[in-house]
Image 1 (tube, one colour):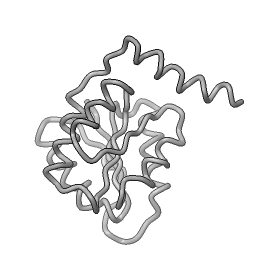
Image 2 (cartoon, one colour):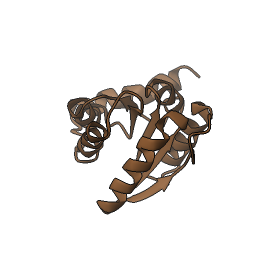
Image 3 (cartoon, helix red, strand yellow):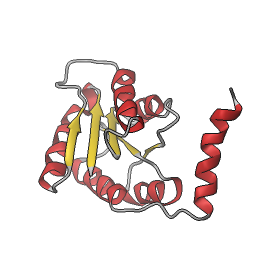
Length: 148
C-alpha cells in the first residue's frame, strides 16, 4: 500500500518520524513535503495530499499541521477525500470502519510520537465495514452533486 504524507512546518518532525516508521513496516511512502521547519502554509500541502489521494497515486494519506485542524479542512475541500482528524486510535479505527476515511489528520503539536503511531496503525489496520455505512458515505458524495 502506498501512503502519502504531507505537513506544514509544525508537523514536519512528526511527519519525518512517521515516514521512516512506515517505510520500516514495508509501506511505500510518498513524502509530499514540507521539507523543513521553515514556515509554510498548510493549505498548499493539504491540497497536494488531497490531489494525490483523488488521483489514486496513493491509497491512504496522513496530514499533519500544528493542530491537525487546518490541514484536515484543506484536504476535505477535495470531494474524493474523507479526512478525519483524530487524537487516539479508537477514533482512527472508527474513521475507517464507519466513514471509509482515506486520510488521517494529526496535530503535530498535540499528539506525541507513540500516540501518532498508534493512530496510524489503527487507521491502516482497519477495513471499511460497508453495509449501512456505505449508504452514508454515498450520501456524502451526493451532497456535492446536489449543490451544483
